[in-house]
Amino acid sequence: MIKKKVLVTGGAGFLGSHLCEKLLNQGHEVVCMDNYFTGQKQNVVHLLKNPYFELIRHDVTMPFFIEVDEIFNLACPASPVHYQYNPIKTVKTSVMGAINMLGLAKRIRAKVLQASTSEVYGDPEVHPQTESYWGHVNTIGPRSCYDEGKRVAETLFVNYHKQNKVRIKIIRIFNTYGPRMHPADGRVVSNFIVQALKGEDITIYGEGTQTRSFCYVDDLLEGMVRLMNSREDFTGPVNIGNPGEFTMIELAEKVLKLTGSKSKLIHMPLPTDDPLQRKPDITLAKKELGWEPTIPLEEGLKRTIEYFKTIV
Ligand code: NAD
Ligand code: UDP
Image (cartoon, rainbow, N blue to C red; front, side):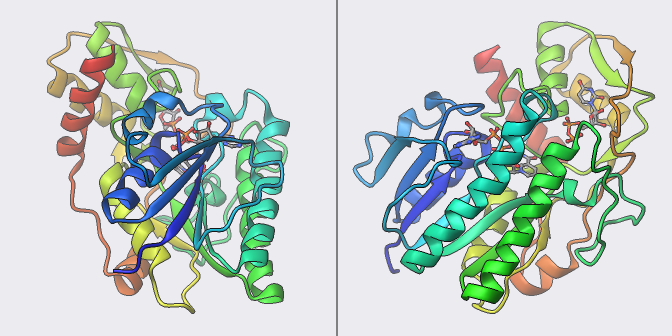
């Protein structure tokens, strides 16, 4: 195997920390860059004893100079609570972060992967979502700072590829969960598990009939790494997610069953522009990457609950 030097932006976050670990386990050298907005040193502290791991505090909206073979650009707050906290900064992180990482990739001839999102489909009118669907996004709604930022990032990636021959890969990540999710980031899986473990009410937004498809972190990262290593002329975008589709009520019931919690379900207002349904069509990932998820929701939830038991 050829040892590569890899930069992971947002490497101290939930997905980034698992990615750093996976790449180190594969024998690569990893530079983790993060400004610790939503990520934490705690997520990567166990990697610091590895001499092939480097941790750098830096904001991706500022230029960054380094020599690497590959860049995984994950820096961006991902939960609605966090990306809406400072929406202008969220747009800057996606857009200026993409420009900085693409400029770097161009200069050093690195391959660069963008962590895009199913949110580029907005509140989708096509179900399940295929990569050819252009999406249904409110440009001025509360989610637009994230959705439109990620859409512009895709545009930048495609144009640096066409205009400057930068080697790019775009992954559209669907809701992913697992150990090291931030307990207070407001995402549904972490919220429900923390509430169930503490015996607090489970907060269902709206009727709870809206759907999501949940992918366990290990499956997601396998897809992401396969995409980075895919044939040169395959750029994506490619959906990576678990096509199993569940309502929020179903998710809450599974969490209650697996934790043995007596928490009650309560209803809260549905956030503005909350997508009604979401489910990836993964035909392209199967064909191009030979990838499909292997960990069913109940199994992934069990592992995630075990993690949360150690921190709440
Ligand atoms: P996360 O919030 O745990 O990780 C994001 C990381 O980026 C954090 O460590 C944060 O501190 C860092 N960061 C934020 N702004 C930065 C900046 N300006 N400069 C440097 N670092 C910065 O979220 P995550 O779930 O690990 O998401 C990682 C990536 O995957 C994000 O780009 C997100 O949009 C994308 N994604 C995640 C999901 C999911 O379900 N987890 C779904 C779709 C897309
Ligand atoms: N949700 C919920 N209760 C919570 C947190 C979220 O019912 O405590 C719902 C939310 O309204 C949405 C779904 O769960 O319909 C997924 O929300 P999350 O923030 O995890 O991700 P996203 O909306 O970005 O897919």
